[in-house]
Length: 139
Length: 61
Picture 1: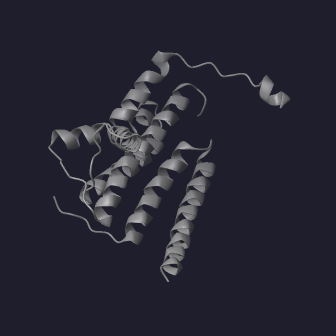
Picture 2: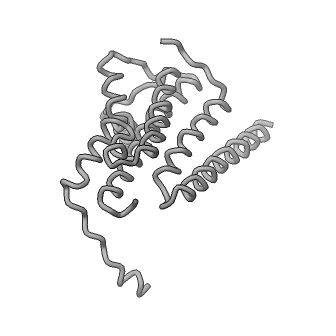
Picture 3: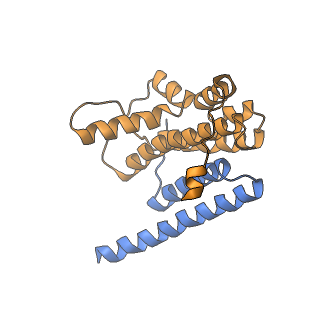
């Protein structure tokens, strides 16, 4: 208890230190790590996130769009949209190239939708890691 | 674009593989710890996959 009270909150690193790695990390999965010279980890992140997104597309997963309605509809669609858009250039290219897949019944479509959202959520983890590395909290 | 059709097991296995790699990479401090954690998470995913699979099998009767 006493230790918790004594714990000092770490100051936030300056914006110019972490903004570029986090922004590049959002745009290109693993890009933040490449920018920070963590090439091996960047490569693993890029490969995993891109493969997961590509498999989601190949399984014809649906992309979420923000919708209004009851609270559950808002939560699911906005949450899914944030997950999708977190894949950065993968999401942008896919939508710019006209990928439209209606939400259909079927296990494979459903897996595809989950793969697309999870790829974005994993990229958020990669962005947080890039932030911590840039701020000197991790090596 | 060709459509990929995977079984539940194949899709879940690949999901576990990609998620474990990312979770391993972004956690811990050293490469050895990251590798161990990634393998641990992958093992947990696969154990849950088989466990829940058998649970559903018996649940269906």
